[in-house]
Length: 333
Ligand SMILES: NC(=O)c1ccc[n+]([C@@H]2O[C@H](COP(=O)([O-])OP(=O)(O)OC[C@H]3O[C@@H](n4cnc5c(N)ncnc54)[C@H](O)[C@@H]3O)[C@@H](O)[C@H]2O)c1
Image (tube, rainbow, N blue to C red):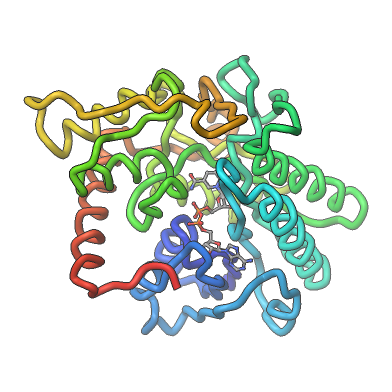
């Protein structure tokens, strides 16, 4: 099959590309390198099944003369924790509409990257695809990202009803692994690994007892492939995550990474940073998925436990750090 991936130079996009090319699919990657980087896509440059377009998808003409069977839409603004709530809302909406128009014009399937953040403050765990999506006040800008994805999900479903758009919506739970962004953009595990590599204290936001359920990127990619190709994925929403018993507190995550990188003898050098430091911020206390639907309907089976996945992520990030320090790879643009 021929697949367009938006956000192809990013973390998930580059890992998905690798697997699709290995399975002999044709991939057209598009990215503006706002967050992704050339290093992530460098292994594919010689592959005849791969082509790459450096472009901003805000411009709909980028998609004009491209032909494919499926679009996997990953390009997105992500975390408005500190600044860019406006850009998150504005740009995610524009990209979505450009991609949907292309899918309708060419009668092709849209596979859309949503997020577990849409479950918001729902206390009723685990989160099923039909669970309530509970947002905080509109004055708390951290909800802008989740809202942009909720809007996208509703808009996709409405477009299916009005115009017959074929879609699958994927709600990712904290994916991590090789090619992850090494800042907060990539998540707490990236930052903790980076802090240890740079000899810095691990800074935990809040009391560290908030939980997440992290997913190794190979499992995320397995889930995406099921959502792309399995006939039962048509016009459905799926959580893509590890098993719910992989839930971990952020403090335990920091301590596990410390132990894996520094051994068990030294006490973890960590510091709690109160949320008030970030202004009007709200966190999600527990984030636990149900993956029953994707297991039953699409035959998804996550293969990675947290420690095994973290070992891979640490190995990759050490290597990446060394190459960056030596100036062998250039991150960003
Ligand atoms: N990584 C996770 O754990 C996670 C969790 C939930 C949801 N998601 C969603 O999955 C998708 C991929 O996430 P990721 O972690 O790979 O993020 P990422 O930032 O690594 O990748 C996104 C890519 O999109 C590109 N991009 C952004 N705006 C663009 C534009 N206007 N034109 C062209 N390219 C543009 C960026 O340069 C980047 O390479 C996103 O939609 C994100 O919201 C990710």
